[in-house]
Amino acid sequence: MRSSMRRVAAASAILLLVPLFSRPGDLLISAQAQSDDRPSIVLIVTDDQRPETLSAMPVLLERLVAHGARFGNAYVPHALCCPARASILTGNHSHTTNVWRNTLEGGYANFDESSTLATWLQDAGYRTGLFGKYLNHWADVDPTHVPQGWDAWFAFRENCCSYYGFDASIDGSVTSFGDDVYSATESAQRAAEFLLAQPEAPTFVMWTPDGPHAPAHPEVHDAGSYASLPPSRPPNYMEKDVSDKPAWVRAKSIWAAPKRQDVDALRRRMFESMRSVDAGLRVIMDALAASDRLSNTLIVFTSDNGLLLGEHRSMGKAFPWKAGHQVPFVVRYDPLLGSRRSSNEIILTIDIAPTIAELVGMEAPPMDGTSLLPILRGDRLRVRARALIEHGQQSSSVAPPYCGVRTRYELFVRYPTREEEYYDYRADPWELDDRSSAPSKRTRVANLRRWVRAHCSPTPPGFAW
Image (cartoon, rainbow, N blue to C red; front, side):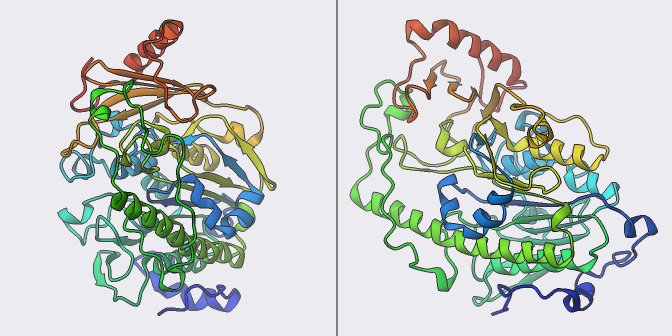
C-alpha cells in the first residue's frame, strides 16, 4: 500500500512530483502566475456526513476549527448527493440547475458542465483539480470524459461507494485499483501532489472522498476503533407518536431489533471511516504548508448532505428534517480569521461558490447563493434570514416531493398533498410536535407558505400547489 499517510516532504518532493500531472501546457507558468498572490482554494466535500462525526477528526479540529470559523447552522438546500453536488459547483438551487435526481435522467444528464466553479476559476488563471467523487452516473455516459474546467481529473467511476478495489478516471484514462488501495488515502495523496507541483500558481483543489457514505468501509487499521460507540437515541429516534405527521410518515413502522442493530453498526463504521478522511486532510494540509500556500489558502470543509439514522422512523436523506439537511461546515482563511470563531447564523452550501468568486475577484454568472465574506470579515452577522429547501419526485418512494423554508429557529414544509409541517426549534428541537395547524401559529405559517410559494419556483418534479 502506498505510504501516502506519511508527512509530505517539502522542498525536494516538489521537483519530484511535478511530472505526475503533465498535460499539454500544465508546466507552463506565465510571468503573471509566478507573481500571482491570489489565494488558493481547497474545497473538501464528504458524503452523507453528520456533524457529530467531526469528533472523529482531530486534525480537522486542530488545524481547521482552531484557526477558522465553524458554522453550526449550515444546511444543504436539497438533501440528495447529485443535486447537492451540482448546487455546490454552481451556487444554485436545484430549480436553477435542473438536477433533481441521483439517476442519469433527471440528474447528471441535466447538468451544464460549461459553467461551474472549475470553469470560472480556470478562466481566471487557476490550476484546477478534482480528486474523488463527482456527480452520480457521470461515467455511465463516457468514463473517459473529463468535464470542462479541470486540469487534473481523478474521479471515482463508481456512483457509490469507492473504498477498496475501485476504478478511477485519471485524466480520462480508466484505471483499476486493487484491494490494497484505499480510495480516501489515494485521492488525498494525489490532491497533495497536485498542490505541490506548481507552488507559485493559484490552485483550486476539490477533494471529495466517499466517506462516510454507507456501507462506510473503514481503512483496515481503523476497523473496530469505534466498536464501543454507544447507539444514538435522540428523542425523535423511532418516534413513538407520529399522529401529527403527514400520512406518508404515519405509514412508517417502528424498526425491529435486527434493523436497529444494523444501523447502529453502520453508524460506528461511519465514525471509523472518517479517520481516513481526517488523515487525508493532514496530507493536504502538509502539502499546503510545504508549498508555502497555507497562509493564503481558503479551505472549506463540508458534506453534500446529512443522514437520518432512525430519526422519525427513517433511514437516509431526502427528507425535510434537520438530520438530513444539516452538514458540518468549517472555513479556514488566515488573512480574515486566524483564530477560532463560531456562527449559528443560517447558511447554505450554495454559498460556497459566490464566496470563492468574491474572494478571488473572478467573473461568474449570477447565483442563488450568497457570499459569506461579510461574516468571515466580521462586517455582518448574517447573510440570510430564510433558506429554501426543495425535493423532487424520485424513482423510489422514500420521500414525496416538497418545498419548504428553514430559518434559524423554524422549519416549514409543504407537500403536494397539501399536508404541511411546522416546527419551532426553540420549543421543539427534535421536531416532535407539528404545529402547522395550531391557531397560535396560523399567521406565521401563512407568511412562510407565501414565501415558499414565491421562491420555490419552478417547482420540483411531482410538486404542485
